[in-house]
Length: 154
Image: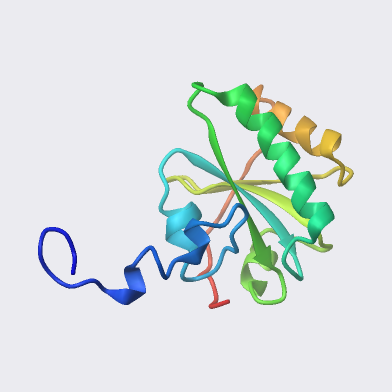
């Protein structure tokens, strides 16, 4: 039963969309619109690796997110943190020219799709520095020619 009449579509039920409850969800064909591509006014922070973030990486991502979120309260910039399996999403890895993983990509999924790759050490301070550059307007985003590839099923 659905409020307002009709039937619940189990595929679209928030109960079946586990990525909506995860702190760092996986970006794939089913979650893409909900966590990044269909969300207005957000920059998608994508941790690209061959597997789900381990405890150390998860803690680092959480620490970075907490730091940038506190600086952005009420300023209009919003970030969503997620991860992508580079073994499955090969067309995205190719589009972003990623040669080594793990890697962090910041994607602006708006009308003019653009991205930035974190090109420094994989430490909390170095990653926070990348976000300081974004917030300060000093980051160099690259346009995505030809649009984004389709996401694969996880």
